[in-house]
Image (cartoon, rainbow, N blue to C red; front, side, top):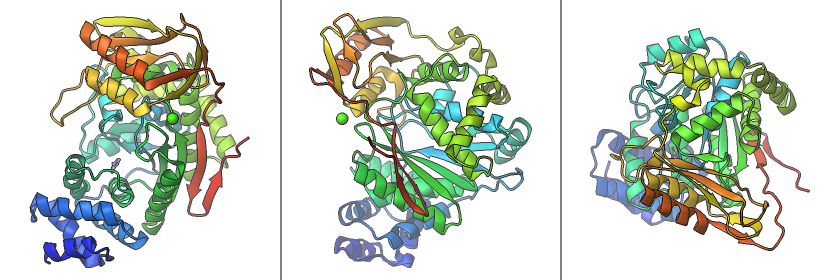
Length: 444
Ligand code: URA
Ligand code: CA
């Protein structure tokens, strides 16, 4: 097939045939077309869009571009959960142990941090000794003995996405609905789960910042899952501010342990319970959200959830004592406490800038080859709608050097708007999308 012809068709706004999409994906997976042709087609897709049919064909072709994990050796319904990416978004480390403690096997393949967002694998690797690479056999065995495993992708799952994602990152073509939907769903379909819960973020820290865009993305992904015979629940949740208070790898592990130990409540726990309840519903373990949340809360308060996290860490070679002694996690040399400096009400946050502030300190990668510093980041003490005084604590910065701490302080101050108008707390979630349609949260 002629790549120039395929590029021309999309340039002219035509609908690509399935054989054209398959040829494009094949070329991306096997490196048989030069990057400049792949990139040209990506930009044509970014500018001219894709129909629902094209998007589905693209996701399917990408899912089948490499190995498909086979998890049938794990009894029961395996439910995966995936977030489109956020800041202080540590739900996996909380809900995976809780869902497992409720008797549902958790066989999860997670990703690394991307741009301003954190990644579960990087957070797990901040635990001393912890490994996130296993073979498919080891992975299946661990889920069968421990009830839980969270690792990186095994084998070569969706290799076309690997190539295309790297190209999108450097050609300004990440923000395309069909490209995001097919990228995420191809990996989810290839990783072998029976059902999928999607956490589609919306707001200033999300890949899709408007509610309309987030809803459209959710609908496209639910449609792809349905077509592949996998039930999908997509929840639209708020990313107007970091979800948890801790941002940075070992700091987020610490916050997840605090939540599982019953010491910390708040938005991070609420969203974890919401997403977890939909995992239990899809696994046939819970009747509805209320029932699911009750089961998960029971697992939290009995300590069964924290025990599952210990089991998983031990099974993956990590030091499970971190669950009982947080000082065993990597600690940054510089810790600075910063106050707000004026009185008023927290109006708004630029959450993407807050994510980039942590990335700049070394919590994330600017280039693919960068090595992460697990100890750095910050703890934010304010939330949108809070009334503050000059001496109210704004944040606690954990940095490698004094200069890093000062730079982070300036970025965090710039990202948070303080004013006089009273502001309502933003909703934690907005809507649930399934193959039956959209259910909106009742707004008061
Ligand atoms: N996460 C992905 O895996 N792919 C995208 O395109 C965006 C977010
Ligand atoms: Ca905002």
